[in-house]
Image (cartoon, rainbow, N blue to C red; front, top):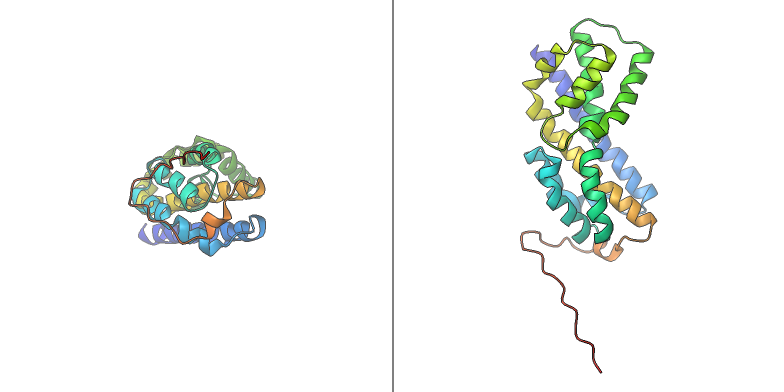
Length: 218
């Protein structure tokens, strides 16, 4: 089983890298009209924490702070969009992973998948993303996909052993998407501070300092 699991792991990482390094930069450059390089420079602390913590919810405070203080997203909008994305924007856990996992389980048990099955996988991956919690692991989404396709649920046990390794890149992909969408929407609605977005990244290891209004002069 080591060789199939290694191939599956490589497939998950490649799929997530395609989303991270191709899909997201294309959206930022052509839809958001902002620099993908600057975005990743600003967002790197949250992406890094997501990779090691494997939790979108655990990364949420840093994700929101990066979105406002580095990416220039309006604070009022970010306070809604970032937490909402932490429970629904799951490109890694709800799209890439369950689709490849379903194909892997079918191959292991010698089950042939047809065109209708692949379309059903795509449909379940999109619709079922809201059922994926922003915590470590993606067992709920995987179980939902396998049961919908009628595949053996024993396949979940095969993947649990390597799930922590896969969950790192899945969560990094999720959190990156949770920062990309607020930038795109804020840009389209005129609520993105491009001066903050293009400025050198501000350090995040210091507590946030509240701004104090200056007294009005006579």
